[in-house]
Length: 375
Ligand code: SAH
Image 1 (spheres, helix red, strand yellow):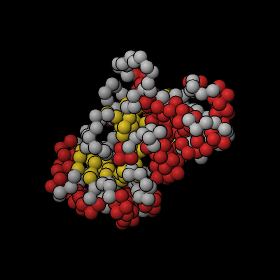
Image 2 (cartoon, protein in one colour):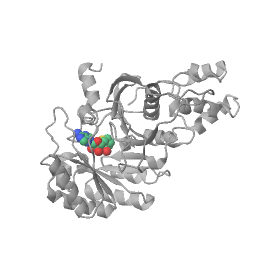
Image 3 (spheres, helix red, strand yellow):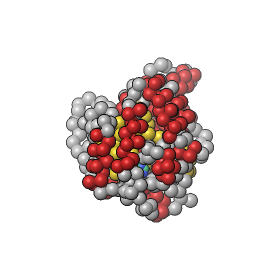
Image 4 (tube, helix red, strand yellow):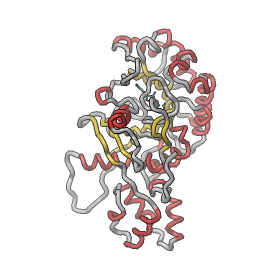
């Protein structure tokens, strides 16, 4: 669990909650929009920066709420390429976010802007055999503010590192850069459902992160009951399934969660999502040499994708230190892709952008914690 703090972080508050509180304090109705503009348009990280708020109100807010920025511990990557951030949280735990330059045909419509991949938990309880995030188990859930702050902190970093700043006479909020969000970092988002749901509401709201619902994708290892619940959320968030095996035999070998929710249950939950939302699901399939990349697997995978009217994202597996899995050679990757296309499904093979910076989930955190073990 997140360690109990006396004061919630202000980034865990919706506009309605904040407005109600400020009204109860006798503040005029324009105060809540002012505070929200400082938080989400200006992305300030201190109360003192909220210069048009009366000082007593700033003090009152500060005694009621925390405003903890994430601390950037490490940033890997080069300009114009994938950047990986290792953040330190207020309690010293580490999480990662990954900033990905435009990649058309991945999760949302073609875009010339930026996608941020965010974490939802410290560690992970699901123990997928190829994934670094779960190697040391689950530590705690992130609060909604810690999910939201990953976007704000990455945008602060972008603003500070922008190559050319256009000077303007009238001060205006810094330009928003991140317009795609994938919840595919460390942790299982649907196992931290309430915090995820609140964070996405804030990131999606016009007064908050203002990221369109169709540009927000949540990825799950396959928690069937929570997929059904997710199907009832009103915004049109997208869903990606980390499938990685098209048969129970292979999925059981790679993903322990499949023993709890086997393919039949997972598929039926996806069908429910499809019926409720009518939105195309993405199936993530990491290609692992000699495990799930045989052409015999392309047929059940294509059949599944056809049944769900889903598209398939093939991802050559990232090697993780200490794990035996390797990615297939490029001709085998392409052969698998062609077999899927021949079977009539939409499939893409991800051009690797993160291998050289250890972008497979959880790797930076493990390195940091090996160097400075958490107390
Ligand atoms: N728990 C969620 C989100 C986190 S994992 C989920 O399972 O979807 C995010 C994605 O990274 C998943 O598709 C996961 O399978 C993939 N991933 C994890 N380890 C990887 C590796 N070594 N190489 C490539 N992709 C990996």
